[in-house]
Length: 132
Image (cartoon, rainbow, N blue to C red; front, side, top):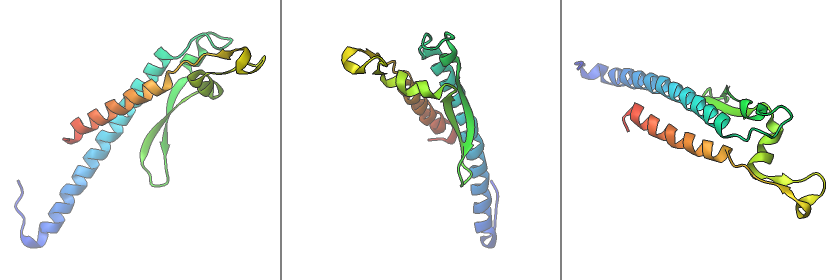
């Protein structure tokens, strides 16, 4: 506990708020990295494996990268190196030989489940790290 006089009260509060802000930023960055790593593992494990010429390359193609917006916030984007397949496999699609009446490729929902799990885990870990 630090004693301050009234003239230094505002400065003391600002110092404590800056320290808390730095701690919160560091903790959030670490949690974002951990959640992204877990989500990539989850997507690799639960992605369909037989939908490319080289079996399993779609599942192995999941990765994440650091993205920042203009404000400078820290975030990670998860993506697949075979981006054209993600929507088709998640939601299904018409076959090339003729519309949905002849047949369609089944949907393999795997992205939504990983996203939901990551969101829940993020909220829980942030609450634990920053004291609810």
